[in-house]
Image 1: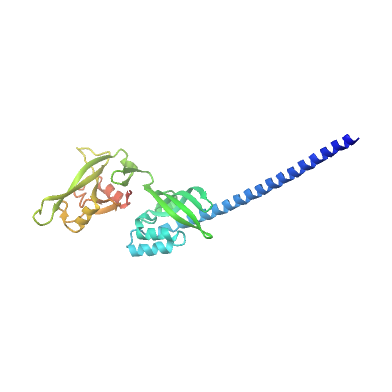
Image 2: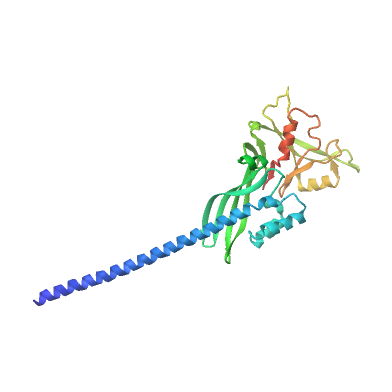
Length: 309
């Protein structure tokens, strides 16, 4: 009888212990489930806030003309971007507006940012990859895209607010276009689809001294790259797109009339620059009005050259 009692007591204690352990495990799982659900809700709320920030910022891009005088650009950046970016990024854009997103031409213009991916980097930081979508009056009425440019944004939580802390801009690409990329000097040039199969002709420019003992003599030279239409032949030549390449020092000398290029009393016009070179269009490059010169003029109006490092 005593043995039977002890056996029953052992069974009872085992069942009680198992029950307590099960209850603790159940409580722990419930707690973890609630914590996971709370984190998911927080992440969803943060992602919605980041999405709204990027979309609202994208709607402001068309209001900032990067070709205006620097004091006007700085004021416009402050007024339109101040509520969306950190003070550090705002100051960076104001000191170098060409690295800021905004309006580069009257048409097309940036309409919005199309978000492609949103990635959580930490509790207080997100990365957003997307495209700046540009349109003209045609796309505004009929829909579609005139041009696009990749943008990568780092979003940082500052206090209770999410703000853009860094931005990386990609190559500006027109819809239905191809891009000539020069990694040696650091620039991209967008071309219409009709230029598919283009060729590159390497040449050089020569600068002659204006005055002094070397007057009329060549004192500076540099590369010139011509983009040639695929239909060009020696029997029926077409208008090339010539791009002169200057070091910053050479460009400053040219502006100070220390030398001149060609017979035209007009200096080349700047197409863009990076930290090492200035890219320019020769004066009177189309003086002979060969076939295709009108098309080249239209290409140049679309700001096709984008300098990079």
